[in-house]
Image (cartoon, rainbow, N blue to C red; front, top):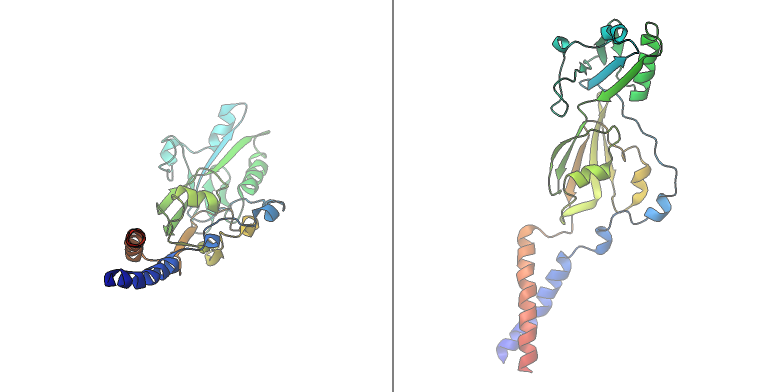
Length: 254
């Protein structure tokens, strides 16, 4: 009987430990005020060209012979992306933000959006070809996800508009240990690094400049401050089982 009294004194301590190690529900739910934020005007966003970008640029016209001088020959390939077919040629944006374009020479593209690059090329090539058809694609868009996610890594992106939500989904979503209120995005623009911290439990970030990711963005998800470590989690799992068994035994003893 004394043993039962001793066990009964331990149960409150174990219960407190379990409560401390639990994560409040409000810290786990994403986009808690989405109803009000979603009614706002959506972001308009386009990535900007940066040094070291690989661009696929193709010029075509009614007569292929006319447009041929404005396209790279296979032997003049500067670089190729592992995610595109081997016959895709690309231009490497150099450290000064320029590419060497056939016929036109050096073109300064860094800092321009894809739409602005298209407009520039339409104007310049239009001096030689009537109504040229031009396509521009960024080949090496990638982001890196680190920290408390289920599948950290660097992910290649085929779209010009890639969101923070998509990046976290690609990395298997946040773990139960993640601090959803402090997700860090590290971004470099014109050689200057900036850091932004996002609270995923609030939806207002969907209208911020960091909702759409830029190439080479780094996302870091830090551990939560109030979340138990894996060893403690194992201990509390065992403690929970012990409480259940002990409660059952005491109920029978009565």
